[in-house]
Amino acid sequence: MKIEYLKNKRILILGFGKEGQDTFNFLKKHCKNITIADKKIKNNYLEKIKSCDVIIKSPGISQNLIKPLIKKNQIITSQTDIFLNNCNGIVIGITGTKGKSTTASLISKILSYKKIKNSLIGNIGNPALKNIKKDKNHVYVYEMSSFQLQNITKSPHIAVLLNLYRDHLDQHKNIKEYYNSKANIVKFQTSKDFLIFNSDDKNIINIIKNSKAKKIPFDPKKQNLKIPDNINVYHDLIIKLAKLFKIRREDVEIVANKFKTLPYRMEYVGKYKGVIFYDNSAATIPEATISSIDKLGDSLKTLIAGGLNKGFNLKELSKKISLSNIENLILFPDTGIKIAKLVKNKNIYHVKNMKDAVEIAIKKTPKNSICLLAPGASSLNMFKDYKERGDLFKKYAKQIR
Image (spheres, one colour):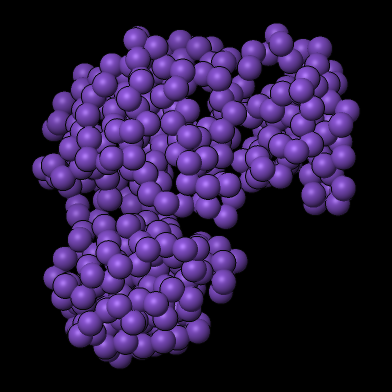
C-alpha cells in the first residue's frame, strides 16, 4: 500500500509490539490520523476496528480473529505490504517452513563480504520500515513468515521458497490457508522478477505453477559447498542466488566457513565431561529434527525430543530415529509418548523438565559423542517458547562439572 493512499485515511495499528511500533514511527511522518490498539493496553482493543479505514495488522494477531469484524469498505494491510510498495531497492524475500533465518543471515553476510550494501530485516527480528533507504541499489534480505505475507499486494523482486511442511495450524484455519499465505511471495511477481525454489518439494511446485517470474530451481540434495556440516542451508540455493549478484562460489565458501550458526539453530554449545552438546531448539516440526539427525550423522548418540502435540505425523521421524545410530532417546511430553511407541531398539527415558534431560544425557552419552536437542515439536506445553527451552538446555549443560 502506497503512502499517498494512506495519508488521509483513518489508520489503526493493530498490535503494538516491535513491528507495530516501527510502523507507527514510520507513518507518523506522513499520516495524521493514527490509532493504536493492543491487548496489553486495553482488553477490548478490537472495538477500535469499527472506526477506521485501514487496519495494519501485526503478525502476532490472527487474521481469523479480526475477519468477522471487517466491513466491506475496510482494508487489512501489513508492515510488509507498506514496505514492498514504498521501497525502491532490491528485495530478496525468503520464506519456507524451516531454515529462513539461517539462509537469510548467510546471504546477508555474503553480500556484505562483496561490499554490496544490504539490510537483514523482517521475521529475523529487525522491523522493515526503519530500514528503508533512498538508494535504489540497496539490497534488503527480508525473512518473511506466513503471517507477514498474508495481506501483501506486491511480491519481492527475488523470491526464495525453501520448503513447505505442516505448521502454524494453531493460527491458520487450515493447511490450505497456510500454503496460500506462503504463495503470496510469488503471486504478484512479473517477468522481470526471479523465483528461486526447491525443485524437490511438491507443495512448492504446486503453488508456483502460474508464476510469471524467471524460475531458478535448486536441488536440495546437492550439498557440495565446502562448509561446516552444522550450517543448515541448501548449498545449491546459495550458489544460484550468489550468481544473480555475480558472486563466485569461492567467495561463498570463504564467508560460510566464518559464519556462526544462529542461536537455537544447530548451535554448538560446548563439550562437557566428554559429551558434545548441540542446541537446535528451533526445530519445532518433525522434518527439522530429521534434517538435524542427517547433518550430525553417526556421532549423534543422544537425542532430546518431544513437546506439544500439534497433530504432526511422527512416523517418518520415528523411522529415522530407529534406523540411526542414536542410542539414547530422552523424551518430553506430549509427542514423546507417541514417539516412544513407534521407535525400536533404543534406550528411552521420559522426563518432565530440562534439568533431568541433561543429567541423563551426560550419564548415558558415550565420550566424544554428540547430544542434540532437536524436539520436533512446539515448546509451549512446558516452556515460554523455544528460546527458553534452548536457554535451559545450554544452562544445564554448562553447569556440568
